[in-house]
Image (tube, rainbow, N blue to C red):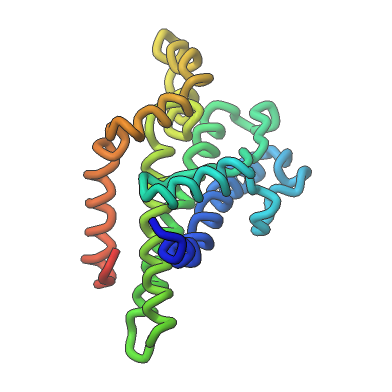
Amino acid sequence: MDLASFLTTLSIAAIPVVFAITLHEVAHGWVARSFGDRTAEAQGRLSFNPIRHIDPIGTILVPVLLLWLGGFLFGWAKPVPVNPRFLRDPHPHMALVAAAGPTANLAMAVAWALVMFLAQGPGGGIFGQWLTLMAAFGITINFILALLNLLPIPPLDGGQVLMNVLPPGPFVSFLERVQPFGILIVLLMIPTGILAAILGGPMDFLQNLLVNTLGVRGI
């Protein structure tokens, strides 16, 4: 990708990526607080200010490099602190805390679809075209983060949900052993094409659902 194309893409992608990553984390903290854990609130992490959540590597370096290379785009923010001991019912509540992140991404994808619907109305002009591209990117990155985090691989949210809803036993013990290597496993799945193959079908389904529901074009 040449520099001009990269800067154009960056102007479209920056806002959707930052908010997709950071609001995912804030959602964890909001749900944890509703169940009695105020750790994130005490550390000032229940904030819409992205600066409080940015991880220099996961929120900036990795997405920018992947954007430049034109590959599979994802990233992460600083994890919001959650202390299960403060939750009123630790295991089921931790499962709901973990599920809050992907749920927030799905909600943001719908919000971006509404933005796209409005931007594609009459009189949008050049700004409407730019906003349509940004909204399309927002839909895509939020669907990617939602589906990625639902994979049953700890420390991803899907793995955390399983570890807290399943009874203690060999499978939970296996997930606990996998957890330190979960991110490495996901990273290895990217260049091999395994991750794209897993997420491709669900991505198409969700995008088609938005197109058919709202009539938006260009996702």
